[in-house]
Length: 507
Image 1 (tube, rainbow, N blue to C red):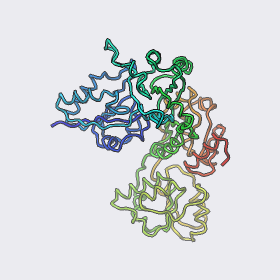
Image 2: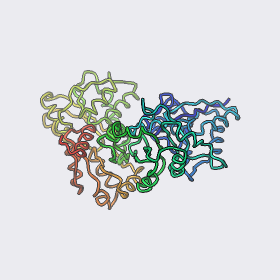
Image 3: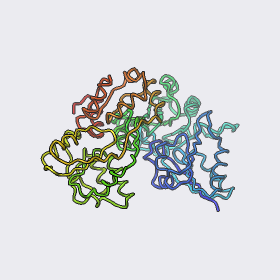
Image 4: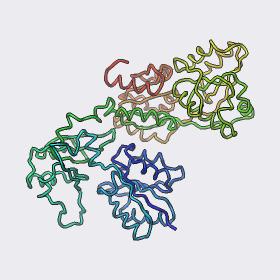
């Protein structure tokens, strides 16, 4: 028996442009073979046990040659594996998917094509350029800008192509831009025809250059624009000034570092990306479950005896309910306890486990929890507080002063995450970072430790954005100058605060 190989169009760059079937294939695959142009965030949907193989190919830099990729796909298929072959754009639009399918067919390995959103259409769309437009462009063609170098004669029919098609989209053509422009003008295309190059189309680092056939080579050299880029030729390029939308987003062109733990960062990253930002994930911390001792287990067994249960973070919620599940219990184990959550994000996490918080303080900090509980608790009441290993003692100290019985269940700890250290240092050295964000005091201290003795020097040209005054106070105590402090202590509030800083609008 053999497995099956899915030849999947991974889309033009933005991971969200993968098809539903493409995502399903990634989620079910035993092996994922991915290209240079396939967004790495697509791999987040892979099974933890999936084998990931990079087979990227760039100009003159091939991790694997095509024949090696063909052999790899055949070998994995014959092992009985389900293989997701991720190819940028669409596998059959200059993606060599047909060659891979022929190799699989000859080896009698099952395969399927999974079409993808192709970059010659998507990249212009993200630049505000429709490839067709009523009364302006009723035809378009997709043309390779990089023919098989072993061919003795070009397979491109320049004479017909130059004047018979309204919009021309060239892929992989930056290196041969002069040859393309010269041939189009030689065979009748006007020198004044508008031309656009869209580099890294659909991604937050997208660049767009608009010129004409006559001047495009000179303009590209002047701008030092490099591959990969789609070349669009035709009058539709003139529509960009009316239909431009992607690079109008408030954070477009801004590179923002997220230092939050990976397990917590996805929602924050998504919010920044939706506003146009290029996000560098450089988690400074990671969370790990703590071992529960006999007293902790007793508390978990008797959780229904507490009148109030207080969750101080979404991580605490997850670790608490994961432990409950391991005990064969669910949210019903809380009995009639009233539940308090610090912040809307913690409240959302509780809702994932069927709990609607009874109490969410106005301000998302420990002092506000005390203020909220002060008017509800009575002397002798019992409160269970879910916290990390290291936490401020504001809540338990204040409640005990009110003669309230407080038990603390420490379920996780934060540790330094060094996996992105090199990437973060290099980005800061290169001056590529506009903002670095801190969502807790621990992200501040751990990031500075990651950066070492030169931390303040590395950060001096980067704006510092903090989620609330407590995190900002920690940053200032470490010698950092704060540029943005979110008045709402959530990641959504921090995104809004950064936008306000970029646009110059007060919140």
